[in-house]
Length: 300
Image (cartoon, rainbow, N blue to C red; front, top):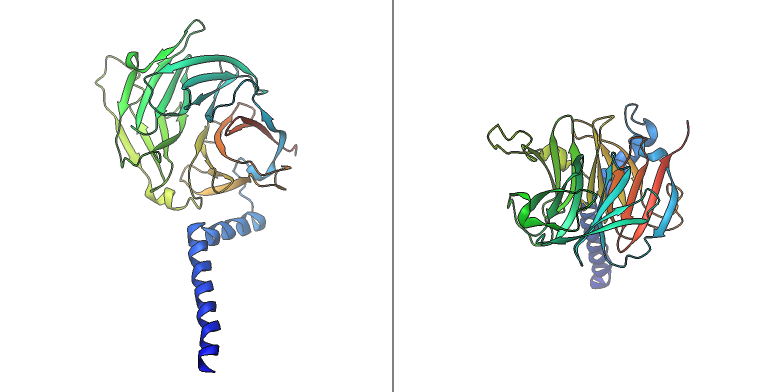
């Protein structure tokens, strides 16, 4: 009789332990508390990601079957750029998700992110080797060779394909944000790259904010976007199906869910890999292997 009572108790304790471990892994308590605060008292100075609705959902990028990775907005061309790493290319997209141009990449290893940093100038990451590669793209550029480009190798906590996954650039503060995907999940701030003044010595300063990173109740980082208007950072997590808005101190302010039934989505975004934002605050997103999304805020 004693054994029959003890077995259900042990099974119950094991279930509670597993539930606790799952909650810790998925940061359910932190996310639940954040959602409660958002509902009770929305952030007044935030972008308000919860107000966004999808206006273009899961549109295939025609002519592309490879894995799209990352996204950046070019305000000069008023187009988007992404990269593929299966067959390394830099690809220019219209704001409607149509391919405008394909530029082959040579010697870039595992290109995982691209970021606009100035007219005709972009930074591309090599995820595995943790290289940042500065490229210049003219209308007549037939291909890009990493051997001809300015490069910065960091080699911080090398961890296979869980390396540099996302980029964002603050043009006013001249800061390049670099996201390490996970194990551990980190966001670095890099000052001094790209090198702006050839007359000055080359000096790179890398800053970490572990307090901010500890507030990120997401499982991984897929992409970043810096909003010049507010000075806030958007962090995209594929595994958590979430976009987080972080203020200047790294505090989460609002979120955009990528799950079915939220933000007007008819289906969950399967594998979100890149996020970009234009001057009007429209959010563009790509998902592997070749899906394109557009989100816009609801009118007040």
